[in-house]
Length: 292
Ligand code: CP
Image (cartoon, rainbow, N blue to C red):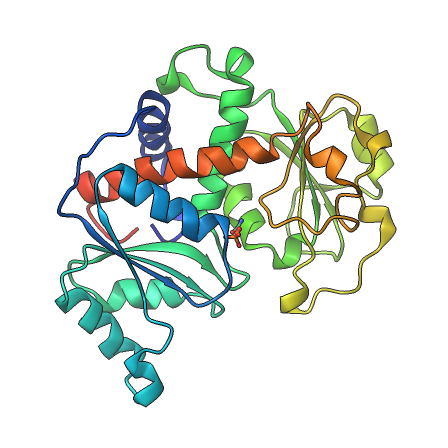
């Protein structure tokens, strides 16, 4: 799983159905070997993959901090080596855009899961977040029938450093696929064609169902923070609050109380991260035809 742009409606519905029905720990894959190669810091993505793999009975190996690449081994040879060692899946996070795509081109049998590549994409986070929205609004969006899932009544405002957010770049195509009304409040203008707000007050006046906040990607050259992009207590007027994490309290979200507010889905997003990753792993192992 490299990009959400490669996923079609039925593929996503199958993952959500698996996640929805699979609420207990089951040992499906006691011979599944998964390598986690995180070249950038991570808390929730790495730990949720670790939890998900172990919950389905698989074995986790973390790629060594000091690998043979320090001795000049190429990326291609490293991927071939990981595959030859018998790993079925490589979960990779990289600073470099499209490194998971390169890895998928170098491996014959091993499946690649993109855990975030530079500013490009973060498909597993986006799937967990879409699932969180679907589950939260289940009464109005799908009743009990996943096969007829439509979200065309849902209003989602995405706010912050969208131009550098790999989560937004994976989430927006998914929301489009389900006909969600997406509007943006961007720190810096992008070429994205969705409606753009000028202020947080405009966002609130729109009465969105979800306000999805983003962190400034300071490690990728984000400009200094501006207060006009900070969500405060006054902005909590019924919309559900989401954030993919990690949060910089005092910047995009003013106080910890907002994170713990009854309308915040932020903790639920983390919980759903494990559930969705279990479903993705099963999907990838059982019936993925390619490295998509
Ligand atoms: N959302 C996300 O990718 O968080 P981590 O960097 O903690 O994995």
